[in-house]
Amino acid sequence: MRASEGRVRPAVMRFARLMESRLAANDHKGREGWKGCSRAYLLRRFFEEVGEYMGALDSSESHSENELADAANFLMMLHEHKRSTP
Image (cartoon, rainbow, N blue to C red; front, side, top):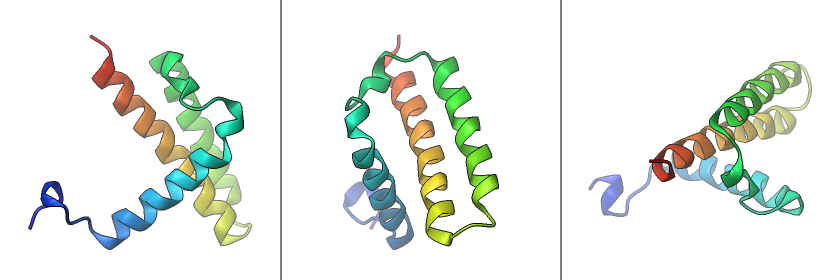
């Protein structure tokens, strides 16, 4: 069975749940406010999050996992931005 048929790999589902929890934690900033952001801004924020992840490697595992999810969320935003921009 393919993912498109309803089966999602467990690792992907775990990470997607973490990504969603990080998005929810930032809802106070404006849900989906990123849709009005430029690709350049989203890409810059992705690299900032990667830097935060690298800085968090020596701290708690959950903190570094959160930074990875934050970075991944900016990639998701870039992916969605590309899909919605002619």
